[in-house]
Length: 422
Image (tube, rainbow, N blue to C red; front, top):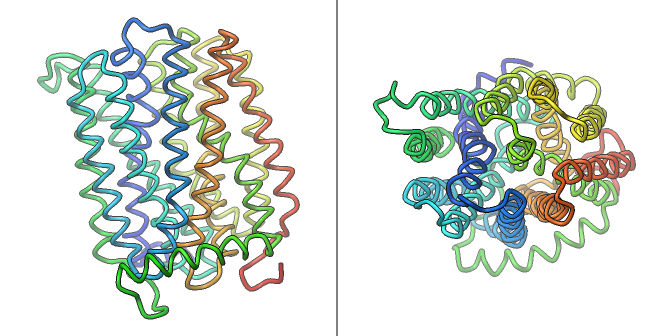
């Protein structure tokens, strides 16, 4: 079974996770929240900057949710999923590089560029997810999906480690100060993202299907096909229950990823400690994501997801009474053990529900649900923090999302596949 991980298309596909995880770690989870609060919102109250960050993440998620299904349907009809992956990657990398040009206090410009970069990230990720069904066979989905996430944690963690050293000791790199080091880190992410996207563009091919249509005809056919997608989801109870469950629990996962650093700052923890905690998540996540892929292949993806959600619920409840940096480090290790697992098993579980030849379209719907959910989480956390003046209450509210998601997931039969009856 492990031999599948050495096939050129599988390795090339997994390296895209290595590529775009640089944005997820260095930018999304790491330096953007720090820089947004301390540099682009200099002199602004912490609760207001938290609100601005939540609104930025929420609006970006709304845009992705609206475009994901139609772009996916068009990609299926035109046979252009790899090309669209490349297009969104170029958008994300260019906007990330442009963040280096934004001056102090210019929070709105930073928010716009970050939003555009995030659209590039999530758009590319949609087509990357959908290509799982092109590089692997169904029995291999759990292992290959976990392999991608494990390389993502390793690659993202390695670049983030270098970037963190640049920021903490800029003189070692001949850099004037930490602020310039952060901006150079954004540039390094853009280059890393583009370079390691090349293997998936060069060596991954979509499985033969219907004759690809010209782009104009594909757009028209994609809109028509989208109506059939909604009808299929309504009729297929397994897919419907899964997507509802995913809507809730991935909201919680993404909110913790985006807001963890902001939460630590609100509690008064040192910036250096928060960066070290994020690095811990990455390097613990590398073997843990691969282990969850192996586990899912043996006990079932649904059971593996439920285990991860139970851990997340406990983490969120404990975070409410968090009082020291040592406890923050402990939570980082625990999150690292399950974060990649819940993401990779969700992808492989859903891949089994997707009808053959319609991966782009249905993974567009999958990403729409994930991003539509992500509108609620950051806005909820930001609004609770602003209204109550207590960031702890904002974190506590996220636990409910994991509980509801887990309860709904229990309604999805273990081992359900696209060929099964609704």
